[in-house]
Image (cartoon, rainbow, N blue to C red):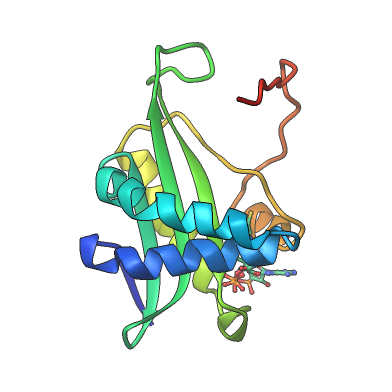
Length: 154
Ligand SMILES: CC(C)(COP(=O)(O)OP(=O)(O)OC[C@H]1O[C@@H](n2cnc3c(N)ncnc32)[C@H](O)[C@@H]1OP(=O)(O)O)[C@@H](O)C(=O)NCCC(=O)NCCS
């Protein structure tokens, strides 16, 4: 298995990994939603890859077996974000035939090392049931939100 950071040439494969992850996570992903997402992704990756998004990929020959995205945000500092920078893990996904081989763990370890190197104050994520044991092993802890998250759908 070859552990790398994705480059521009990997964008079509990253799009496939994004759709594969969402299809498994959102079992109700409708065809129109998948189409809209697929239409947004090429421009998104072209504009953000290796700027504020690092995509880690485990490759078996040329096929991507697993992915993990680290999205970096910079904002005005506050007590929880002293450096003003934090990361969010997205699309942690190992194709079913490659699971329980330590692949996601290796990709997350790379992301955590980069997070330290880039002076991120923290890395957060929303864990699925599948992901919880893995994240706990890597010392992620559950948080009790200090504020009430709210949303205005547009
Ligand atoms: C969660 C997921 C990414 C784990 O990928 P993986 O490559 O199989 O994980 P790893 O093999 O690196 O597992 C690392 C450790 O977590 C443990 N672990 C992984 N999945 C587990 C599970 N479902 N139940 C219990 N333990 C698990 C393993 O025992 C392993 O521990 P070890 O290194 O001490 O043996 C994979 O199951 C997946 O893609 N699931 C669907 C998408 C998803 O839910 N992603 C998480 C989004 S937050």
